[in-house]
Image 1 (cartoon, rainbow, N blue to C red):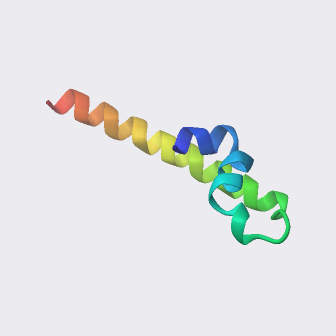
Image 2 (image 1 turned 90 degrees about the vertical axis):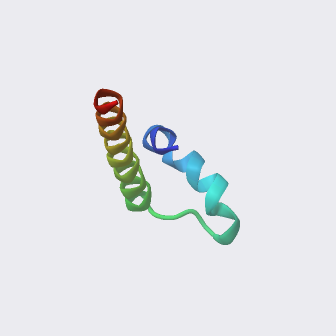
Length: 55
């Protein structure tokens, strides 16, 4: 999910938050959403790396 958010934050917003909004959020919202997706992807890869080498 984090990778999808990093690639296309507007798609994730349309699925999760658009039903509550009356208009589209500003571009900074999508930039922050993309940044969170990138950080989540990096964290997930690091955790996957540590789990695979500690077993």
